[in-house]
Image (cartoon, rainbow, N blue to C red; front, side):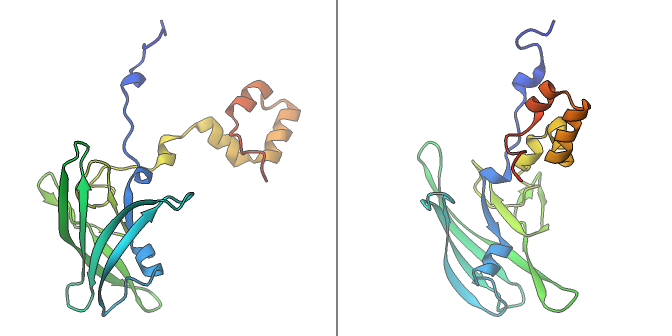
Length: 191
């Protein structure tokens, strides 16, 4: 009992995470001054490695918020694993909702169709999942967050306690030092 391969976990595959995807964010577009009411502009959005500033990918866009139906046109080329290239060109509708103290909040309307049904959800971010052709919301791409896949109840409980409470628990004998040290994350002692 309990030998190598005795559980189903060896066959468990984790979901793709949003951290593994290219993301378009309304807040990033607003922060960079791209998304404004009453404008028509075009340009490109570039993704770079956060540590090395190395170029990773880019996408062309055309923004039109002049008319009654604002949109963001995306155009880019996908290179598949077999080397085939595919040019993508489509519109993503934009929508606004009023804020409590004036102004408006912008939203993407998810352009994907899943199981024959248009999503059309208002979202703040669109993702291009690995192997996908189109940007869409995380629900349509069936994405999750990396942190939700790295859950360990013991570590979370110890993190909630904090370093001082852990030391006090170890001194009083409430926390077994052998098991306690194994469950602690390496950065728990940093204040």
